[in-house]
Image (cartoon, rainbow, N blue to C red; front, side, top):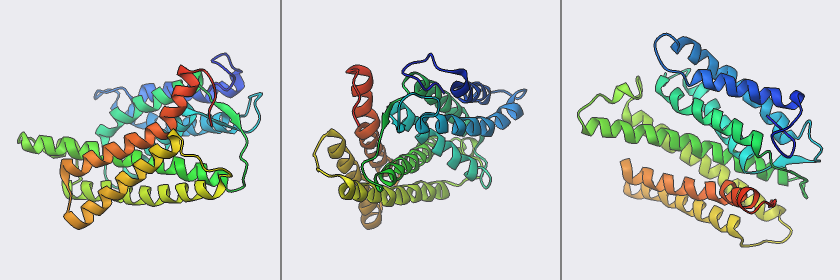
Length: 270
């Protein structure tokens, strides 16, 4: 992935992103003739993506000091986590249809991070990096939850249309898919709570800015979802709508706000 202030970067730091992009493009191919090659390309793309993230967020090959943060690197890391979760899960339950969603998403975020590599940032507290790690981890867990919720909604639509839901998620019954979806929500909520707690502890001056407000609103939505599911048995589309709203609020909290500052306003904002 390209690590200078724009897309004209050194080949040494850019080749992992180029390789990841090519492999994701192969993984996105569909058809009986290329299915086996495409299936093998996704884990290879994931590994190349990891190396690109090391260059990107680590700032190797860049003249900027410190970790490189921005909407595109964080979005890239989030999608990488989701693909990693899928890779582990597919060992137990095959979900071949998901590859047609994840491969284009991986390709998109790799390209975005190449053109918008972020800005150098120094952490003011030794605990601040853990706040960042937990925050991105929560992004990834909720991203995995959203992916499974989309599969759940699609499967339920197929059932209502009297089609076989197994065509979308073979080998995974709806109840198992639903339990897995909300297990990701539960773990993601715990990680997000830790990220917010560390953010309060490590911030020298607390500010109710757009990022804080949206993060707290997202946390409140997920708390309401888990409470409603436990006390009132929320299921199906009602529960997934809450999940989508909370995920959008979290996405706007960091990625959305950074996109506005970096791309629309043309100035950094950490």
